[in-house]
Image 1 (cartoon, rainbow, N blue to C red):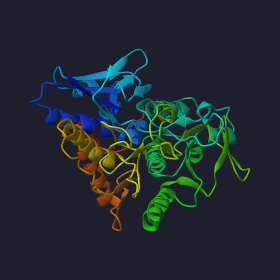
Image 2 (tube, rainbow, N blue to C red; image 1 turned 180 degrees about the vertical axis):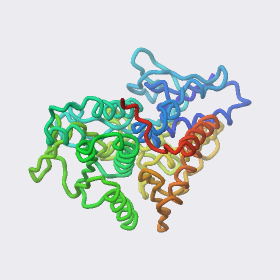
Image 3 (cartoon, rainbow, N blue to C red; image 1 turned 60 degrees about the vertical axis):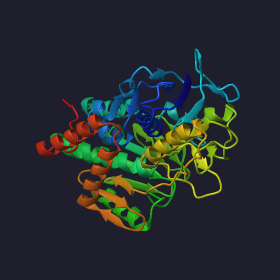
Length: 412
């Protein structure tokens, strides 16, 4: 019996699994094992809406076990610690699994830069629990206000700082700001309404620096109009409890700091005998085969294509890579030639709060309600199962019909 192991249950790994389910329907001599320390697939595009309670966490998550199909597919909730590529073995925390072919879809982890232990004072932004924790912090911040607080203390208590103005940081700041202003501030006294703010800090001089000036300019303008404070061209040099110290020496006070300052390939890859780039990403050829290794493929944000323009590190790219890697595994099993991966650009979708977004389609920019609608549709298509597509579409539709598109935060 042959075994295909997929390490990682994100967009790349789940899309590879779905393709293998189809490709192996009539082949009962191959087992497929998906390995991930989490029990759930996380639909990361809606994490900001989980934090503002605009989308329930159950819609954002999907049990990996539910994706298994019959006796030849299994999900193992464990962490891959290393590989013996000669013997074809994955080392787990308490066991080992043999493999004939391997697909690495390991994703990324927060890039904390040179800061000393920022996780002790800042919330990370990667998991469903991160989103739920931020939602609880928002609720607690408003529920635990005391009349004894002076205006400076009140302002710090109600300031939410997002570090990093890439797509992740911009979407989080927009959603958090819009949700609170719509759902909570109208019930609050004037002093509280004046104290609340969302601050977006970026080391570069512009938000969304990977995009064109029209995208960056529109996003910055709409963020400002919505009430988000932009601090640009300032790198965070240090974090203390409730304080971000900028390189200029200026101190920004915020009781709630969320680190969205970028992602990087997992550091544990550096110790498992894989060919890596200077940034720690797995080196692959055009067909997603890992360089120098047989029967090993890699997909997702932690791969680096050798000798060519890099692929974008997005969910839209990962869901296209997964089926190609899976198909190349099946082709390799029968000695056939492998297909190169050719990325099809859907566009870059950045949500900017309530009924607003910016869509960059490689030179063509859409904004406002039209871009927001296109973003919603793209995310529905991106969902991994028909059930999840329907659930996501239904929840968004219900929110729209109820007139509470953003924010159902349960503040007393």
